[in-house]
Length: 273
Image (tube, rainbow, N blue to C red):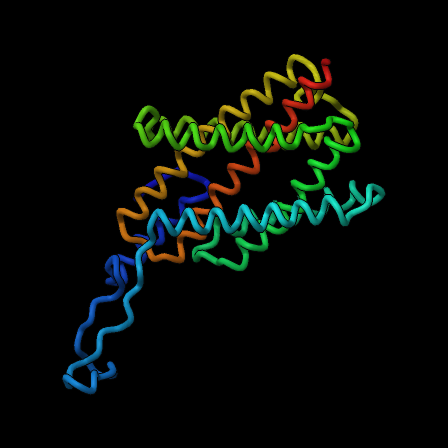
Protein backbone atom coordinates (compact mmCIF):
# COMPACT_ATOMS: atom_id res chain seq x y z
CA UNK A 1 0.00 0.00 0.00
CA UNK A 2 1.66 3.21 -1.15
CA UNK A 3 0.68 6.53 0.33
CA UNK A 4 1.93 10.05 0.86
CA UNK A 5 0.16 10.51 4.23
CA UNK A 6 2.78 11.98 6.59
CA UNK A 7 1.22 10.40 9.69
CA UNK A 8 -0.02 6.98 8.61
CA UNK A 9 2.41 6.12 5.84
CA UNK A 10 4.21 3.62 8.08
CA UNK A 11 1.12 1.39 7.96
CA UNK A 12 1.77 0.52 4.35
CA UNK A 13 5.44 -0.12 4.95
CA UNK A 14 4.58 -2.34 7.89
CA UNK A 15 2.25 -4.38 5.71
CA UNK A 16 5.04 -4.90 3.19
CA UNK A 17 7.36 -6.14 5.92
CA UNK A 18 4.70 -8.46 7.30
CA UNK A 19 4.08 -10.01 3.90
CA UNK A 20 7.80 -10.19 3.11
CA UNK A 21 8.36 -12.15 6.31
CA UNK A 22 5.70 -14.62 5.28
CA UNK A 23 3.00 -13.35 7.60
CA UNK A 24 -0.58 -13.46 6.52
CA UNK A 25 -3.46 -11.44 7.91
CA UNK A 26 -3.81 -13.74 10.91
CA UNK A 27 -0.15 -14.44 11.68
CA UNK A 28 2.78 -16.49 10.37
CA UNK A 29 2.04 -19.72 8.55
CA UNK A 30 2.53 -22.91 10.52
CA UNK A 31 5.25 -24.99 8.92
CA UNK A 32 6.64 -28.16 10.51
CA UNK A 33 10.33 -27.93 11.20
CA UNK A 34 13.13 -28.42 13.65
CA UNK A 35 12.80 -26.49 16.89
CA UNK A 36 9.02 -25.92 16.72
CA UNK A 37 6.86 -27.01 19.67
CA UNK A 38 4.71 -30.11 19.21
CA UNK A 39 1.11 -30.37 20.25
CA UNK A 40 0.79 -33.09 22.88
CA UNK A 41 -2.35 -34.62 21.42
CA UNK A 42 -1.35 -34.83 17.75
CA UNK A 43 2.42 -35.15 17.70
CA UNK A 44 2.60 -32.45 15.00
CA UNK A 45 4.16 -29.03 15.36
CA UNK A 46 1.86 -26.59 17.12
CA UNK A 47 0.84 -23.52 15.11
CA UNK A 48 2.27 -20.25 16.41
CA UNK A 49 -0.17 -17.85 18.08
CA UNK A 50 -2.41 -16.02 15.61
CA UNK A 51 -2.06 -12.25 15.24
CA UNK A 52 -5.49 -10.66 15.18
CA UNK A 53 -5.87 -8.19 12.32
CA UNK A 54 -6.81 -4.57 12.88
CA UNK A 55 -10.47 -3.64 12.56
CA UNK A 56 -12.37 -0.37 12.34
CA UNK A 57 -13.67 -0.99 15.86
CA UNK A 58 -10.07 -1.19 17.13
CA UNK A 59 -9.33 2.23 15.66
CA UNK A 60 -12.53 3.69 17.12
CA UNK A 61 -11.74 2.35 20.60
CA UNK A 62 -8.16 3.60 20.49
CA UNK A 63 -9.25 7.01 19.18
CA UNK A 64 -11.87 7.44 21.91
CA UNK A 65 -9.29 6.35 24.49
CA UNK A 66 -6.75 8.90 23.27
CA UNK A 67 -9.38 11.64 23.17
CA UNK A 68 -10.35 10.81 26.75
CA UNK A 69 -6.72 11.00 27.88
CA UNK A 70 -6.25 14.27 25.98
CA UNK A 71 -9.37 15.75 27.58
CA UNK A 72 -8.37 14.74 31.12
CA UNK A 73 -4.87 16.15 30.60
CA UNK A 74 -6.32 19.39 29.22
CA UNK A 75 -8.63 19.85 32.21
CA UNK A 76 -5.78 19.09 34.64
CA UNK A 77 -3.44 21.59 32.98
CA UNK A 78 -6.16 24.24 32.90
CA UNK A 79 -6.84 23.93 36.64
CA UNK A 80 -3.42 23.07 38.05
CA UNK A 81 -1.03 25.40 36.19
CA UNK A 82 -1.20 29.01 37.43
CA UNK A 83 -1.37 31.92 35.04
CA UNK A 84 2.15 33.00 36.01
CA UNK A 85 3.55 29.78 34.52
CA UNK A 86 1.18 29.63 31.58
CA UNK A 87 3.67 30.81 28.95
CA UNK A 88 6.54 28.56 30.00
CA UNK A 89 4.31 25.50 30.34
CA UNK A 90 2.67 26.28 26.99
CA UNK A 91 6.02 26.42 25.18
CA UNK A 92 7.34 23.35 26.96
CA UNK A 93 4.31 21.23 26.09
CA UNK A 94 4.42 22.43 22.48
CA UNK A 95 8.08 21.45 22.06
CA UNK A 96 7.72 18.05 23.73
CA UNK A 97 4.55 17.31 21.77
CA UNK A 98 6.25 18.24 18.50
CA UNK A 99 9.20 15.94 19.22
CA UNK A 100 6.95 13.04 20.20
CA UNK A 101 4.84 13.61 17.11
CA UNK A 102 7.85 13.36 14.81
CA UNK A 103 9.16 10.27 16.60
CA UNK A 104 5.82 8.46 16.36
CA UNK A 105 5.31 9.49 12.74
CA UNK A 106 8.64 8.18 11.50
CA UNK A 107 9.24 5.15 13.72
CA UNK A 108 8.79 1.69 12.20
CA UNK A 109 6.74 0.07 14.95
CA UNK A 110 3.51 1.17 16.61
CA UNK A 111 4.29 2.15 20.23
CA UNK A 112 1.18 2.58 22.44
CA UNK A 113 3.23 4.10 25.27
CA UNK A 114 4.54 6.89 23.06
CA UNK A 115 1.11 7.53 21.58
CA UNK A 116 -0.43 7.79 25.05
CA UNK A 117 2.42 10.10 26.14
CA UNK A 118 1.70 12.29 23.11
CA UNK A 119 -1.97 12.48 24.09
CA UNK A 120 -1.02 13.56 27.63
CA UNK A 121 1.42 16.25 26.48
CA UNK A 122 -0.83 17.57 23.72
CA UNK A 123 -3.75 17.55 26.13
CA UNK A 124 -1.79 19.83 28.44
CA UNK A 125 -0.91 22.08 25.50
CA UNK A 126 -4.52 22.27 24.30
CA UNK A 127 -5.73 22.96 27.85
CA UNK A 128 -3.29 25.83 28.30
CA UNK A 129 -4.11 27.37 24.92
CA UNK A 130 -7.81 27.06 25.68
CA UNK A 131 -7.33 28.69 29.08
CA UNK A 132 -5.45 31.56 27.45
CA UNK A 133 -8.26 32.33 25.02
CA UNK A 134 -11.09 31.77 27.50
CA UNK A 135 -9.68 33.35 30.69
CA UNK A 136 -6.80 35.62 29.73
CA UNK A 137 -8.25 36.99 26.48
CA UNK A 138 -11.78 36.96 27.91
CA UNK A 139 -13.51 35.02 25.12
CA UNK A 140 -15.99 33.28 27.37
CA UNK A 141 -17.59 30.15 25.86
CA UNK A 142 -15.14 29.99 22.96
CA UNK A 143 -13.77 26.60 24.02
CA UNK A 144 -17.14 24.85 23.89
CA UNK A 145 -17.86 26.45 20.52
CA UNK A 146 -14.52 25.25 19.15
CA UNK A 147 -15.05 21.70 20.45
CA UNK A 148 -18.53 21.46 18.92
CA UNK A 149 -17.31 22.86 15.60
CA UNK A 150 -14.29 20.53 15.51
CA UNK A 151 -16.28 17.34 16.04
CA UNK A 152 -19.01 18.59 13.74
CA UNK A 153 -16.47 18.98 10.92
CA UNK A 154 -14.93 15.59 11.73
CA UNK A 155 -18.24 13.73 11.50
CA UNK A 156 -19.13 15.65 8.34
CA UNK A 157 -15.91 14.51 6.69
CA UNK A 158 -16.55 10.95 7.85
CA UNK A 159 -19.99 11.09 6.21
CA UNK A 160 -18.61 12.56 2.99
CA UNK A 161 -15.94 9.85 2.85
CA UNK A 162 -18.42 7.09 3.63
CA UNK A 163 -20.75 8.36 0.91
CA UNK A 164 -17.76 8.56 -1.49
CA UNK A 165 -18.44 12.24 -2.12
CA UNK A 166 -14.74 12.90 -1.49
CA UNK A 167 -12.21 10.22 -2.36
CA UNK A 168 -8.52 9.93 -1.64
CA UNK A 169 -7.44 9.61 -5.26
CA UNK A 170 -3.69 9.75 -6.04
CA UNK A 171 -4.09 13.26 -7.44
CA UNK A 172 -6.07 14.40 -4.38
CA UNK A 173 -3.49 12.88 -2.04
CA UNK A 174 -0.49 14.43 -3.79
CA UNK A 175 -2.14 17.84 -3.94
CA UNK A 176 -3.24 17.83 -0.31
CA UNK A 177 0.15 16.66 0.93
CA UNK A 178 1.82 19.44 -1.05
CA UNK A 179 -0.54 22.05 0.42
CA UNK A 180 -0.03 20.71 3.95
CA UNK A 181 3.73 20.85 3.54
CA UNK A 182 3.49 24.39 2.25
CA UNK A 183 1.28 25.48 5.14
CA UNK A 184 3.59 24.03 7.77
CA UNK A 185 6.58 25.69 6.10
CA UNK A 186 4.80 29.05 6.08
CA UNK A 187 3.77 28.67 9.74
CA UNK A 188 7.33 27.77 10.73
CA UNK A 189 8.78 30.75 8.87
CA UNK A 190 6.15 33.00 10.38
CA UNK A 191 7.02 31.73 13.86
CA UNK A 192 10.73 32.35 13.36
CA UNK A 193 10.08 35.86 12.04
CA UNK A 194 7.82 36.64 14.99
CA UNK A 195 10.67 35.76 17.37
CA UNK A 196 12.65 38.59 15.76
CA UNK A 197 9.76 41.04 16.00
CA UNK A 198 8.61 40.69 12.38
CA UNK A 199 4.84 40.32 12.06
CA UNK A 200 3.43 39.14 8.75
CA UNK A 201 -0.21 39.38 9.78
CA UNK A 202 -0.89 35.68 9.15
CA UNK A 203 -1.69 35.09 12.81
CA UNK A 204 -3.10 38.51 13.62
CA UNK A 205 -6.72 39.59 13.83
CA UNK A 206 -7.20 40.97 10.36
CA UNK A 207 -8.35 40.01 6.89
CA UNK A 208 -5.13 38.13 6.11
CA UNK A 209 -5.21 36.28 9.43
CA UNK A 210 -8.83 35.22 8.95
CA UNK A 211 -8.20 33.99 5.41
CA UNK A 212 -5.14 32.02 6.51
CA UNK A 213 -7.08 30.41 9.36
CA UNK A 214 -9.88 29.44 6.98
CA UNK A 215 -7.38 27.84 4.62
CA UNK A 216 -5.85 25.88 7.51
CA UNK A 217 -9.30 24.72 8.64
CA UNK A 218 -10.18 23.48 5.17
CA UNK A 219 -6.87 21.63 4.78
CA UNK A 220 -7.08 20.13 8.28
CA UNK A 221 -10.61 18.93 7.51
CA UNK A 222 -9.57 17.33 4.23
CA UNK A 223 -6.66 15.57 5.95
CA UNK A 224 -9.22 13.28 7.60
CA UNK A 225 -10.00 11.86 4.16
CA UNK A 226 -6.41 10.62 3.96
CA UNK A 227 -6.72 9.13 7.45
CA UNK A 228 -9.95 7.32 6.61
CA UNK A 229 -8.49 5.95 3.39
CA UNK A 230 -5.35 4.69 5.14
CA UNK A 231 -7.42 2.98 7.82
CA UNK A 232 -9.70 1.37 5.25
CA UNK A 233 -6.74 0.05 3.27
CA UNK A 234 -4.94 -1.13 6.41
CA UNK A 235 -7.93 -3.16 7.60
CA UNK A 236 -8.42 -4.61 4.12
CA UNK A 237 -4.81 -5.76 4.06
CA UNK A 238 -5.05 -7.31 7.52
CA UNK A 239 -2.44 -5.29 9.39
CA UNK A 240 -1.91 -6.48 12.99
CA UNK A 241 -4.12 -4.97 15.66
CA UNK A 242 -1.26 -2.97 17.22
CA UNK A 243 -1.26 -0.60 14.24
CA UNK A 244 -4.66 0.69 15.30
CA UNK A 245 -2.70 2.89 17.74
CA UNK A 246 -0.90 4.52 14.82
CA UNK A 247 -4.18 5.07 12.99
CA UNK A 248 -5.78 6.59 16.08
CA UNK A 249 -2.74 8.82 16.51
CA UNK A 250 -3.22 10.16 12.99
CA UNK A 251 -6.82 11.08 13.72
CA UNK A 252 -5.85 12.71 17.03
CA UNK A 253 -3.25 14.88 15.29
CA UNK A 254 -5.85 16.08 12.81
CA UNK A 255 -8.42 16.82 15.52
CA UNK A 256 -5.96 18.84 17.59
CA UNK A 257 -4.82 20.84 14.58
CA UNK A 258 -8.40 21.52 13.52
CA UNK A 259 -9.44 22.52 17.05
CA UNK A 260 -6.60 25.01 17.42
CA UNK A 261 -7.36 26.59 14.05
CA UNK A 262 -11.09 26.85 14.84
CA UNK A 263 -10.27 28.33 18.25
CA UNK A 264 -8.06 30.98 16.64
CA UNK A 265 -10.66 31.84 14.02
CA UNK A 266 -13.41 32.20 16.63
CA UNK A 267 -11.17 34.52 18.63
CA UNK A 268 -10.73 36.68 15.53
CA UNK A 269 -14.47 36.83 14.93
CA UNK A 270 -15.29 37.57 18.58
CA UNK A 271 -12.57 40.22 18.67
CA UNK A 272 -14.42 42.13 15.98
CA UNK A 273 -17.56 42.38 18.09
